[in-house]
Structure formats: structure tokens, C-alpha cells
Length: 366
Image 1 (cartoon, rainbow, N blue to C red):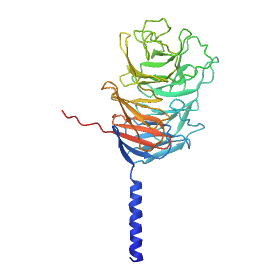
Image 2 (image 1 turned 60 degrees about the vertical axis):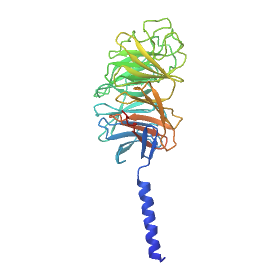
Image 3 (image 1 turned 90 degrees about the horizontal axis):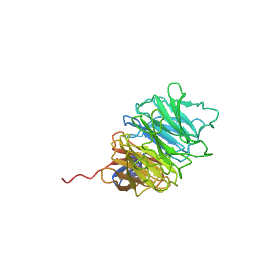
Image 4 (image 1 turned 30 degrees about the vertical axis):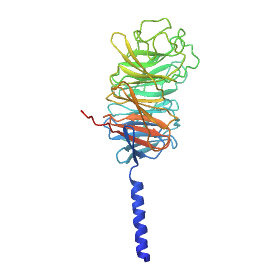
């Protein structure tokens, strides 16, 4: 074989190798076909309302990236200002407003608004009463539009910002007696219709944290909230049945799209609660636990992961909460989850990359 033929063979082999490595990495596991779309650590992720792009936070290089999830093309990538990205679904979080106007980010106790068109950051600087400590913000949450943003102060408050002025327009105290030195709350969410808040509720008369519910005006909804160990006003307590101990701290809440159903997570227990108009709370205790949760917009699936594990657990609300496990082939621990608006794709950020899982449901035989 002469040297020219050898050279052509080498070039052809290199071209084939380059083509293979340039193709998206795909694998089918469980109900998902997984595709790797980004090769950087992703501490938090969310989708644009039209489902075409995702925003991700890189936990190593301290930057935020907007990219087309189908092509991997980066729209913009900007350094994050003066903040670190801890691997925590509570301390660092990204949420896109439902009308697409703003991306909200919490990191290092501060809250930011990001313009999705340019990547420009705007920090929201709170003015709080003198008796309050400097807030430590986590979990930005939108209501039904982008005019107001609610965030949790881990020291015991929900603060609601006017996104036009940047001012706090409402403060909801989660500790009525205000005598807890360091509550370090992490459980909070705002319902998609903008009408209800759920958060940890602390009281001297409770063993530990309970689930508290407030209306949009900040009034405690006593029909659903257990205010003391002897309180029987609520017919069923979320996340545990009345009479059981609440010694464990609540770790996380996530409303489903109907604004009546939510997941409540303790350290070793998971429950799905549904609020009814008569004050009854329908309760499903699940044999699972986790640290990261997201409901699919169609409310069929609850995705659940543990930030020290590589699997994502898919809980099927339409089939008696059956559970199916799936694992992207990257072998890296989970860091964040987010569903596409059409409920067909799940973004899973890990400590090394971003994977998109596409649902592949079995065909009905009927």
C-alpha cells in the first residue's frame, strides 16, 4: 500500500471519528431517551415558556448560559456577578417567568433579575425593617405573571418584590412568635395561579415545622394549616396525618399546575397533598424521598432526584403513583431538574453536563 493511499485512509478514519464524536450522545433508559446537550456543570436549569431554549447556571465557572437545547447553540453566556453557585437546589435557583419577560436567580443569599434577550443582570436590593436581619434569599418563585416575584428568606419570611421598581411590596412572616434564633427554612413555593403560598410554618406549640398556607394577601389559611398539636381544624395535615410527630424539618414544596396539588418533602418521606374547598387535604404518602422535585406541566409526572445520586425517579400520578427510575449515561450526580412546557422533555443538570430526556411511552395495545 503506497503512502498516498495510507494518508487517505488515515484522513477518512479521522473524519469518521470526528463525525461520531460531534454527534449528540444518546441513550435509552427507562421511559427516557437521553441526549447530552451541554458539557459543563449545571447547578440549575429552566426552560423558556415557548420550550425552544433553556437557561443553565455553571457551578464551576460562575456563569449563566442561554442555549438552544436541540442544537446546543449558545445565545449568550455571561459571568454571574459576585456570587458562587453551591450545588444545592435551595441556595442557587433559576426560574423563568411564565410570560417570558424575566429570568429570576438566587445565589449567595441575593436575588437577581436577568434579561433573557441580553443576559443583563439587575440585583434587587431589599429594604427591610430594622428588627429584621439581612435577608438570606433562596427559591425565586413567579406567580401568574412577571409583575411580582416572591422569594424565601431562610430566616423566616416570604418577601414579594415589585419587578418594575425593585421594592418589596409585601412581607409574610412564617414564625408568628418570632423567637427562633436560626430557623434556616428551605421549604416554600407560590402557586402557578398566584393565589396561594405554601411554606414552613413554625410555632412554639408545634413539635417542629408544619406546612403553612397563605392567600395572596398574606393571610394564614387556617383551614389547611395546623397551628398547634391540638389543632383539629384541618381535616388532614400536609404532609403527615394528624396526630403524627413533625419532628423532621420540611425540606421542599412544589406546586403542580392546578394550584391545588403539591409535593411536600421531609428528610425521609415524600407526600403528595391536594387541597379541597371544604378544608379537606387529600394525602398520598409515597415510599420515596429526594432533594430535587419538578412537576410536569400536564401534572402527570413528578420527577424526583437526590443530589448525591445519578438517577432520576419518575412518579406517575396517573397510575397510582407508580415509580420508574432512569439514569442518563454520564454517571454524574443530579443537580437540577426542569420539564419542558409540553411535558415531553426533562432537563437534568448534573455536576458535569446537561441531559435532555425525551419521554418514550409504551404504545397502548388496545
